[in-house]
Image (cartoon, rainbow, N blue to C red):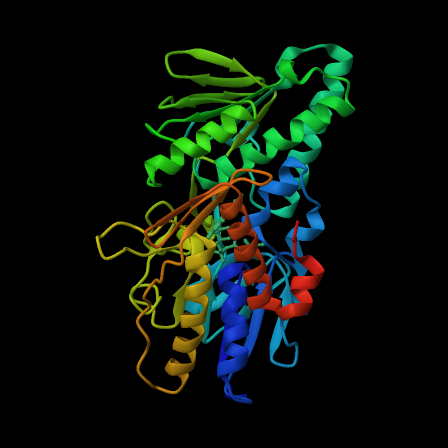
Length: 395
Ligand code: FAD
């Protein structure tokens, strides 16, 4: 048929919002839309630090994609993309391939290890439901092993990176480990929770007063900070930091950086840390048929610095991407993407958070409620009230 084919790869924040907005924008038979994702569920990445630490169930962090998409309007394909071939307008999957007229890449990011030896091999990372299950099981298994071999390194938990995901994860860990210690008959005072960050401050770029507040909250929960100290190497039983100091730990979780999905560089796009610097309309330079959104893309703010990769920007890009696809099909003018910053919240575990909204600084219980509202708002946007009731966390 002559109906144009739009293929969206990745059903994360960017991909889901693109697909949903296309459902609203496109008229019957204006285009065939296919959404390809490795799993048949969408995961709420911004929530994954909780099931990783064991403070929430996995099921609160994922939703079957079929519940989010109108299957009369969008074809869902469960498949893993192996290769993108822009020259042939083709996507290669594990089992077959398909062609597109227009492509949206929303494949998210992958951990950036900055070439630190051993980090790839020995550190755990929070990036998917599967990786989160591993972290959760690993933590409990270390405690179980400790009760059998008495190896004290099993009681040390290192988190590399004190950015938003590192801080949010370590906060959950600090909430969870006292409970686990009790369950495994271990004195919590023997457990060490250590956050190592190379930058001169935790939460780089965030308001200094709130950073101090966040660190105080976490210190009270038992976290030790090693700030301004780079990890030199990751080993099976610890990390080497600073000038050859070894921190013994059988658990190292790396949250120190994100780069674009490796498939993008392999496809021949010009990248910076795996990301493509997209144009104002969200297209890859030189490819009017390819839109790249979310963690795989790079966009500069008005001051010329890259926007940090967030769910917030990926969602907004998804909506504009769909509008620009419709405009492209109709040979109309495209919309420039303008990021609207709704604020930033970092959760610090149960009942605690820090937030900046506009010029306002918010901390403590109020900020924690704000975090819940942000989470519920997302569920509402993608799935309406039914999803809020099914997956929402109100307490
Ligand atoms: P993703 O949401 O990562 O989705 C990518 C999708 O592509 C996934 O469904 C994946 O399965 C699929 N995929 C990947 N490779 C393939 C393949 N080869 N074939 C098929 N499918 C594939 N941001 C905020 O704004 N606020 C927060 O509070 C916040 N908290 C965070 C907390 C944690 C612990 C983490 C890890 C991140 C947090 N972020 C937060 C960042 C945010 O999660 C990301 O920026 C966002 O998920 C990026 O969206 P995306 O659409 O680019 O990719």
